[in-house]
Amino acid sequence: MNTSSVVLHAQGLTKSYGNVRALRGVDLEVQRGEVFGFLGPNGAGKTTTIRILLDLIRPDGGMVRVLGLDPQKDSLAVRARSGYLPGELHLEDAETVETTLKQFNALRGRKADWTYVRGLADRLDLDLKTQAKNLSKGNKQKAGVVQALMHRPELLLLDEPTSGLDPLIQQEVHKLIGEAKANGATVFFSSHVIGEVEQLADRVGIIRKGVVVEVAETQALIKRALRRARVRFGGGIQIPALEGIPGVSILSRGADSVTLQIEGEMDALIKALAKFPVIEFETERPSLEEIFLAYYER
Amino acid sequence: MFTIFNQSMRRWKWQIVGWGSSLLIIAVYLMWLYKPMVEQQAQLKNLFDAYGKEMLSFFGGTVDIFSAGGYLNFAFFSYVPVAIGILALLLGSGLVVADEEKGTLDLILAHPVTRTALFWGRWLALVATLIAVLLLTWSGFAVGLSWTGLDTTVWQVLLPHISLLSILVLFGTLALFLSLLLPSRTLAASVTGALLVVSYILTSLASVNDTLEPLNTFSPLKYYQGGSAINGLEWGPLLSTLGIALFFGALAWLLFLRRDIRVSGEGNWRLPFLSRKMKASAANHANLR
Image (tube, rainbow over all chains, first blue to last red; front, side, top):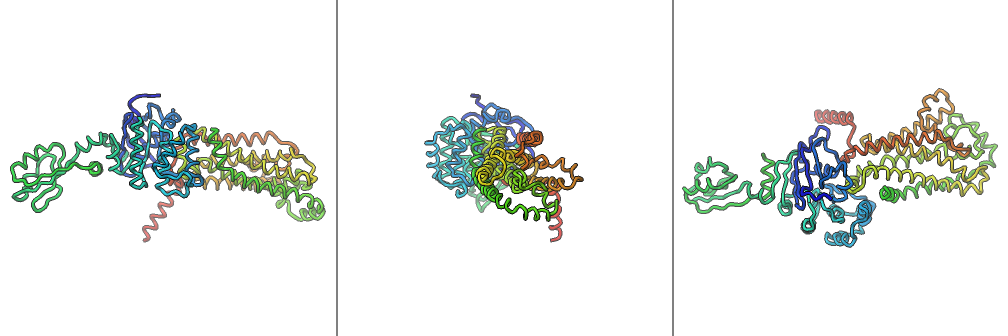
């Protein structure tokens, strides 16, 4: 077993579907034991990247290693050690969830502990005796989560893991991901639910039009990103004094207050404000969502 | 591969039961029908003489239908490749592409199973399914044989089934190959079905029209013995048919190894020229509005 600290490594990954360039050179590195959130809107290349990692589709160019292995040459080993939840889960309609899970388990050499599987189903409030055709989207998703986790893989590749789930079950899935991490698993999950990424991910990668535009620790990204400040002046708004401060832009203005966006250090702004009567000064950190949107507005 | 084979057999068990039991009943009925037919031999001969050669060619030609081989061919084996061929081409065209179009293949292949194991495991299950259906059919003939007085043995009756199996495997595998080449399973099944029907018509008519013989060389059903196989199998045509089936199987396997697995919703992409035509049509429509 490869114990290298890098579990996922992609370099210059490209993939086109006809004239559509889905990936234009994806570079990624995911460390062992971390939860990595892959953020991007629909069509950005998240699913394509994950499917290349499992050799479901072949890249046009670039290099990829999963668990230190080439997914094309060592696809069996990669898949044996991974758990995958597809973005759009489809199950065999005529089969019950239990039969489907048993069939998947048979493909893995019957390695899953069935007590653990039942425990997972209970926690997600999933009835294993239901036929797939009678499952709601949410319940299908639960079955998908169970099949991804049931053999306790060392790498989890989850494409939109909480899609279609109600908030309570979403929290349970978050807990399961946390437990997998605590047990040493590496989790790579894509999402466009930014709150989820913010809550779960140690690091986050933002993909935009087939290129990873940012990879950073989630909290560091939030800290170093744009802040917002609201200033209430005692003697009218001093707009001219605020214009031209490096990294500061005016978002909105009220009768006696102004909302500013600050990129980087706040020192210049505070020095400029010090010359005027300021009644109130509030700052707030942006959410990951705002950071994400900022990347997409560029 | 064994797991994939088992799972495929489990999935197709109702196909085996449905097709197998229907054909078994037909076989028993045909065996039961033989005696009354022999009793009315004279009238039937007059009736068949009234039919044109072309008409009879679709039921095995102008052979003695009161001999064992002639009767089995006339009553069953002459047309049954088209009937059971439908099962073969439906199974073949859906062998991997049905799951792909449903969106379930993605998840199966994310498990530790190689594409080779998946492909050949399922192909073997296809062959085993056809064998099971034909064994049930044969058992119908075997049961009926005891009261017909047909001058043949149970083991001789098995031989036309083997010839039939080779043709079914060929068309099933051809459908599989086309499903990996053409945009959808439906199109692959339709094209294979059309080829099967054309082959049946061509080979039937070639038996009464020599000018069709050069073309008939390319018809798979020319190499199918039908009921006459009870007198012994012609190994050359039989092995050639199976060899060609394996050739298409190998081509399909190579296509599958190189394939980007589509996800659900991508299943019905159109041929490029059709797509262009539809775009042009849509543009014209929009301009007219």
